[in-house]
Image (cartoon, rainbow, N blue to C red; front, side, top):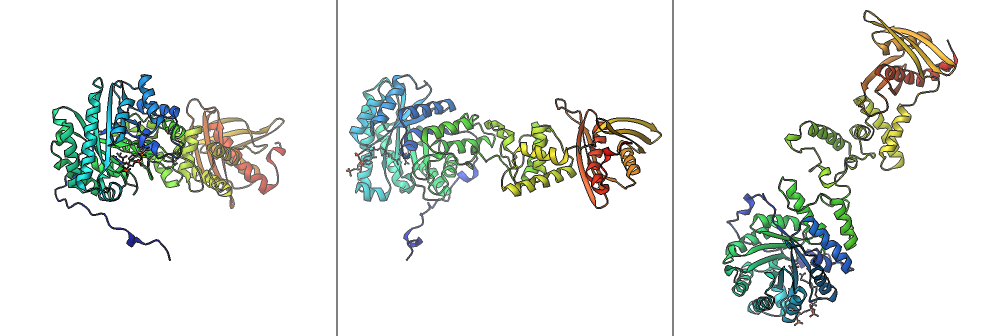
Length: 564
Ligand SMILES: CC(=O)SCCNC(=O)CCNC(=O)[C@H](O)C(C)(C)COP(=O)(O)OP(=O)(O)OC[C@H]1O[C@@H](n2cnc3c(N)ncnc32)[C@H](O)[C@@H]1OP(=O)(O)O
Ligand SMILES: CC(C)C(=O)C(=O)O
């Protein structure tokens, strides 16, 4: 029989709260961020970081602008102790950064914690104990009063040992671990008892950190819990309220965001959400969420790629290619309609930058995070003409008229379907050059002379290479028509121009002009593109190249062979 049986579980009881205010709020400034990468993140790694890796990650966090960094659990292990000592002894903690350390509410651990911190300018001592019914009953085997007593004793030791190190600016932090699974009134009761020891109203800096140690409800329920806590904690105005969410249900970030709406001042989390089980709340994502709303995240994420690389180097954890904001593929569109919209949206933004960023499918400008626009549009079998045109324009300064973009896109798609994968920009250019830009042998434009009589243009065109130059002449309303007339006379056939486009190229490109043409000959069509020193030369060559694709096939008479 299958063990997959939902009846084993109970629904999370929501808080009966009718006066919630948080749904009507918006976040218009960044919370205080506290990184717990070097503690909660580290304790979740198969192979915890060594001192060098921790140093590197610490420096990364400092460079990003974190002002509160939990650096370890120094009483738990010698490497953690040594790391804390090293950053203090080597003067690596900037004056405006407070390091934070975690300890259980046990005297010997607290004593050792303070030893680790000796000489630090400012620090946050973070003491915790679980307060929820399951841990009260199963782990501590204590009632509410017994568990509250653990917190109170811990708070007292934290205070007493701090007094032995008067040179340091101490902040005390208490976490009712598993807050979100604790009865709200009991969480308030315990934190009030801790405050009675620490007396924040007399100036002691105090943080109450409310963890969703295991995420077990929807984020709105957590927000209700946080708002309720803030409303009921006596002397709430004297303490900072922090949240520490985990991601068991995949909503760790949402829970922290809603908790900020509900009154939290501070958010603990990790880069990329590394941490126990499914991870901690991801600070990079939450900060970028703010950034994308026009709110200063007060963290520098501009070198996101380097940050992600250092993160992987230190933790051994990969960054998922679809990780919000920083994953390799998160600014990439393969699908045709998205590419088309991005291309148009980017052009619109270039023309109207003051209107703000509103490019479809790109929630922010990827360049803000050091991402290259080359990554945005990539071509595979799902792509359309817009994407192919975008790549040629972006990487080769070749702009295609709509009808030609369709043809080139079909050729590229055929290649992608054959290879079953992505077609790189260089290959797209190669397909374009080979299938549309090649000049058939003997169909090179050698010379031309034009004269105009009224509306008519007369063209005398030399075609071929080396000794085999053919001289044609014809007339029409323009040079293209004149050359087509010359070819039709020469072969006694009925070539017709279906599509034609010519334009000057931007400065810096090899040729000055590009022309493209599609001609029809009976049931056949041929498309060709040519570049030239001027638009006339490009137009004439394009017509010759297209004609060269159909005429020899039909007449079996290579043009250049019949010099005349
Ligand atoms: C949700 C979190 O992330 S909390 C942080 C968790 N992180 C870690 O635990 C990493 C580092 N921890 C460790 O290395 C070890 O746990 C140590 C060194 C701190 C302590 O190790 P030990 O004393 O060997 O044992 P252990 O952690 O198993 O202690 C369990 C005992 O402490 C008690 N205890 C657990 N947490 C706390 C606490 N926060 N405050 C007071 N007592 C606690 C338990 O009730 C248990 O008591 P018992 O022995 O009377 O049954
Ligand atoms: C110690 C606390 C803050 C913790 O890590 C948790 O509850 O997840």
